[in-house]
Length: 65
Image (cartoon, rainbow, N blue to C red):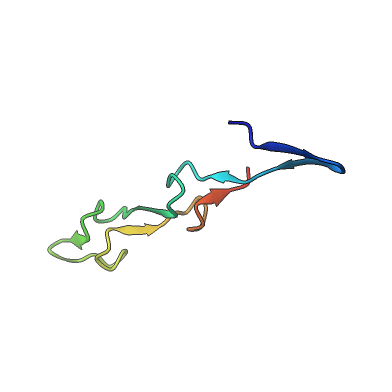
């Protein structure tokens, strides 16, 4: 799908969905692998949620490049 739009004063390219997180803004935690536990305790990186904010889009789910 081509997201390029032509407007009277030039070309505008709409931001796209982040390919790292598939647009959710979240990725599996790198320390616990998404299970929420690390060494038998609650994972300190994700707080037991199993996910962290995507570093590519900073959690927004969209990228402009």
